Image 1: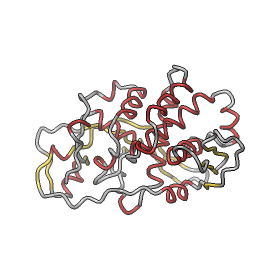
Image 2 (image 1 turned 180 degrees about the horizontal axis):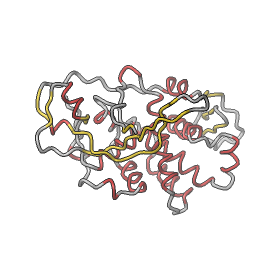
Image 3 (image 1 turned 135 degrees about the horizontal axis):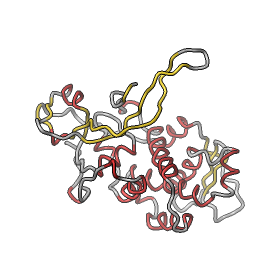
Image 4 (image 1 turned 120 degrees about the horizontal axis):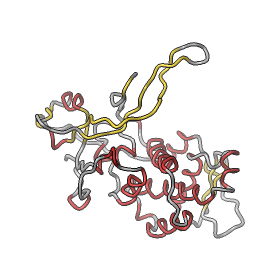
Length: 278
């Protein structure tokens, strides 16, 4: 009922996130159990990056801020240590019309959430896991799936602008969909992105395939692809090069964007309290 991770799925040890590089976050994301959001997002939606961070800190059950646990009739035990999540730094800034608006100026690690095991109190309400829909995702992202018109029979799919096409005989159609969605969300298919693709094709293919792999894993759909083939594809395009922090952050963000775009609004809970206003 608590939605805790199985013993075999738990990380070997807790880490200090302030000392962890984005490359380590990516490596963890590529090896952690699937559908982890169903565990951590029971009462509040956390970004995919924060879910990876919570896993690295050893979280095994639902998490929430102190205030949320109090609202649920549970008390955080004295002496419990809060886990860290990244929260946006919000500033007030005037727009071109002189009206003050909230602007995100960066992110900061803040120890602000506790897991179920650190609380005592009333029984938790029934859990309704989120459902992901490709139609909802395409509509939310403003992306259209069109007929496959390539004469290259070896092509699994392609994307251009805000359109994607999947080969009717693609070996893994859902994974191919995620790969092409990744290209679109990462803006590889814009005029500027296409120009950059000519010189940074390997990096962009790493990003699209990384997005596909991580999204499929989070949706618990690795049985609809060949994970080892996907990892080999990533390695081929990187040619043993190490992606920079920005490229990895973009992959993590694109996974989060695709998952949220296809998730029913009815089961998404705001995480606006997890922010710092300045």
